[in-house]
Image (tube, rainbow, N blue to C red; front, top):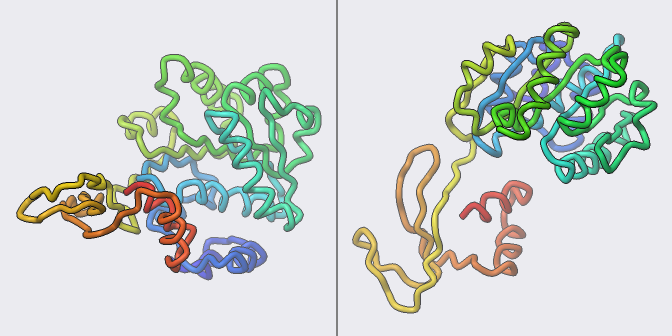
Length: 279
């Protein structure tokens, strides 16, 4: 699906124009599937897809569209760790702050905006922090149109899951009008979780860009592997989608300067580093 086609799904032309300014031309299969299942229609969705398939951007699209509608609604992004909240806050400010979209962060380290959260378009927080805020200030849910829960598989965690389960239960019972989008790459009981949340399950099993995972041979002596003579710097890999096992000769990317050099020669630099580091 091309970014231009988002207009057919009632996404504002201003959002489409801004996305194109960033260089977005096409969407991933996970993003396209979420849109077709009602992302822009307020439907609850559970996205279960491999890493680096654009899951976070699904939530961003919904939040951007909600912030540009006449009935402007606030969006919350919930993450499991304060460090992730800090990183997302910086990324969102860099990308969307200049659009006039007001972005706040609320964690145990950041409470300066807590009394004024309703005035922000996008709020980034941790599970525990937003759960505590809603208990103390239930009126905070007024005006919320969307909650995106990153790493939603933590609901099954023995220690972290309690706060997230309480939060999701409270939202479903007392604020059923709020759209919930759960994101995960590792949830094992996706269908059961989707049913409990009242979500439509969007499950993607393949990556748009093939990922090779494996090991780099650093031995000083040649070694035979599946009729291939391995030498120092060869990369033995397995492809995510096809499960093909092979050898890439003379990759030799075990040094950071070589990783940086490889990224500089990759047309898609932003996608190159995660791919190379996985190797």
